[in-house]
Length: 407
Image 1 (cartoon, rainbow, N blue to C red):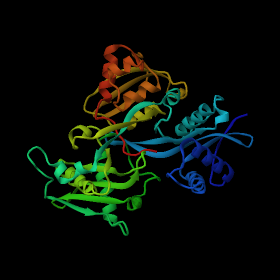
Image 2 (cartoon, rainbow, N blue to C red):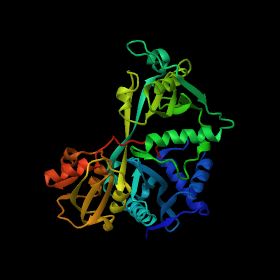
Image 3 (cartoon, rainbow, N blue to C red):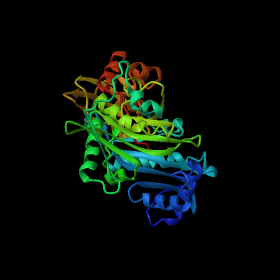
Image 4 (cartoon, helix red, strand yellow):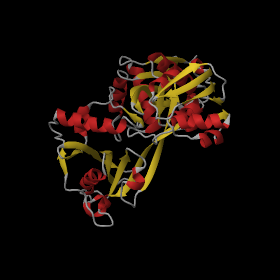
């Protein structure tokens, strides 16, 4: 009989077996990490994460983890459970192991008061069957490092980055707390009004870890911090080395150009650069031409629909839509509800006509504004009155959902 158990740091045998299973499924992490390092890291992860194992007697069949995180949704923070490290042993597949693990994870997040859950899918259809749906993206652009130099950033009129921008580097050996707080404040200023980015306030985010990166530069204008960039030297999939710009946060183009010029100064030793985009639109209008943009989708699931709606921010548009929700894995979401939005806040109250019928996948896709009315209908994610579906999509519409962190 398959049992789902929660692992603790004292479960050394099971955490070692879980680590070995994950190494087989995904490889070592970080790359080239020794097996003992991976095992110890996975055992310690049970201190902050909720880690479940599927066992049968002494046999480990599968594992999954829930990261305690938060996400910004249009100015308001929602507690989020990040699903990661999901693996099923080869000999145990097609026995419902993943179903048991994910069902237990949904129940746990419901009990912990985490109304939304996010993951990066290795097999999207498997997660769709449990109510997750693509709802945003982590966008990156690959560029020759040379085009990020001051000359490469010069526009048609030969305008180079403003000399009014002052740059200072984070002291990696002894980082000033004021600089660490400044970086977090700049990130939060960009992330708070957006949809999807992590709050970076949970146990997985310590400001001091910024000093472990190869470089962090803060830009200021007239004495006011206006942006920053962080980067590391990383191995590319073809074995070469590239510059990985983890964050590029700026509230104006001349600040962005000044930060990119710093990255471009590595052109003599690092040929290529990958930049994570805090706003996917930047790949088209805010960065040099000649790059190749990649999009890694992330999936969302609403664990508690009423709490998710109540905790999210909304735009200036107001209105009401009657919904009928069917959610097999989270029956507490089932039934007819009326969505009401006014003055940037929303509520979901029982009742109504059920004019729009949808399940957890449709809820996820519309909740972030990722899918409009036409996409919801063509993908069979929503059914019902056409005007009501359009109104539903309009109430959730906003900036393109994004995230800079993967897990």
